[in-house]
Image (cartoon, rainbow, N blue to C red):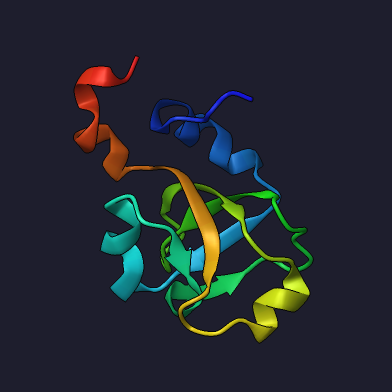
Length: 103
């Protein structure tokens, strides 16, 4: 399986079916390469299956990255604040952290 990098993210995000919006207070945490916790999530699309690819946005609908949903919709509603919800795969901050390695 190929890993989607930040260079492929922007052309693809407009076709994404599943979306997650994170709170302003959690944006930098995500952009530094960390997973998104339940306490970071502002809202999510409905009926997202577990392990589905999701595009992550800030509250102003600016795309921040891409990840995999670690829980299903039912588990999400029961999750506690410290539970991982989105497993980060790529984010806009990756470009700066790995600029010399990106193609």
